[in-house]
Image: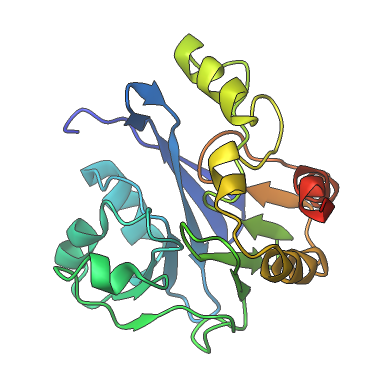
Length: 233
């Protein structure tokens, strides 16, 4: 990963994303970190990207890194590096992750209510009902941005050939969609419907996903359509 190219760009005056390639089984799904400058002047990092010297310089120029968030059991790959570089930062885990990553020192486990440290800027809920992972979903109110991780993908035609094949197979090609893997993991549909209803009650337009293109507008309607299958028996 020494030669990884991390692109850093602004989505809002208090929110940025860092994006780079990420290959799983030879398929490049990409990876996205979301960065929020809190009202406290501290940085909140969601699903952290590979920390290059250039990325560290950009983060440090905005504010001190205070919170490093793992939103589900799968997005924790680079947290150890951030803990080493930013020893004053708090690592917050999704349910089940502390048992999986005993090498990390977590400050707490995320739940169904917004943490007091960022309640001025972000709302959060836990998306229940999936046996694979309980994902913590966030809303950045100022930018009306929903921040997802693996609940939905949105892999466009511009991706490499094998990625497009995988996206079609997963049902997430060129649209905001829930992968077949995630669908099969929905073991408690009633809990999932309740979580979805709470998300759809939020005021958002943009949807940021961990893998694929960001939905810049019309995100609420696209999310509702992506989960239409959940209403089926």
